[in-house]
Image (cartoon, rainbow, N blue to C red; front, side):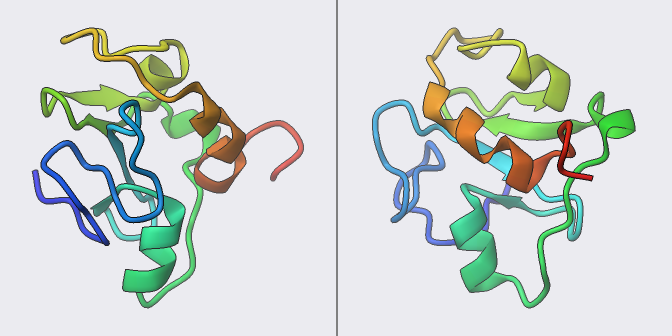
Length: 107
């Protein structure tokens, strides 16, 4: 799976987020391309971010950088680690959910 943006390693870390737990990439609804974070999308894509609508949360749109498994948005939001390889995810990414996903109060 190709990941766009300012990627710094093969586990999808980028120049903006590169802790041990920053191992996911997000497929953006606007362009169907994986980026490590919204900042990478802003720097490299030539269009604004479009959030995933709630009715599409069963779409495979999250890539685990540790094992390259694609997860649905629901699977990602419901877990603190990859259900396949058990690599832990950065729980602080939840703060950015309203950027990527339609949440209550963000419509």
